[in-house]
Length: 308
Image (cartoon, rainbow, N blue to C red):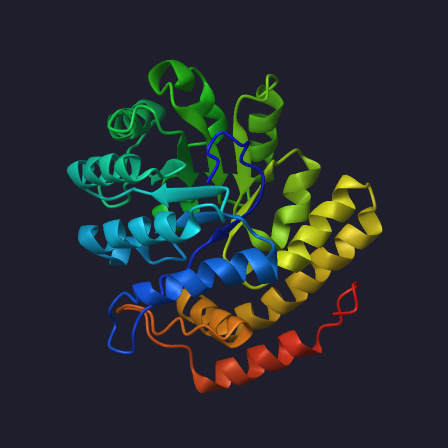
């Protein structure tokens, strides 16, 4: 890996493969890395986040997964970002120290969401305590208010953050508030921070206001298509970029109506890649056979601009 390379473009929010009896399935990660790189042209990953069921895993499982991704990604992946957020500050600090010790490219932290921070100062105090345990590792804030219920605007959070968290490098912005994102980017005149958008069906809109790239679950199986959208946008071919975004949206709109979450993402990744992702961990339950049949038929029916 090359941690000094600027983080931009697509970052796959990795799924945690599990065995049929619900144990973490580490041996398939080698195949998973090769699939992302060779089939999807995605060389950055975000481990143990929402898609990876990170908060449903034990600390030990999260460490094992981080180690395996770093090990298997060596000389293949550009960035392995390890999410180390937890409801417990000591656990989050322990995971941060571990990520630093194994050579993770960066760490990311979600806000606690049971006992919640109520203002910017409380949130930054928590983030600072975690970041300080990995003082040489780039740090990203993982902003996902639809799941955390913490609606502190990122624009507000950025003011003076570098003084309190010297390793702060940017934000995984998983919210539909494009005004907040745009204001963050507008304030980022020196381009010292990276803003990675996390709502896959709205990525083109985020690129238009200046997002550096994206972290998302669909890049596990639609990474190559989304990379073509990024290329079209970079060439100012907005008609082609919109076509890719609309087709991704067509698939997501279809599966959202069926009920689409982590379990269903695991099912889609399994039938697209051929790599068994296994069941989710309770309280999530397996995608239905009906969902799998319908989702596969829908994805197969889409005609992409590259003819694939």
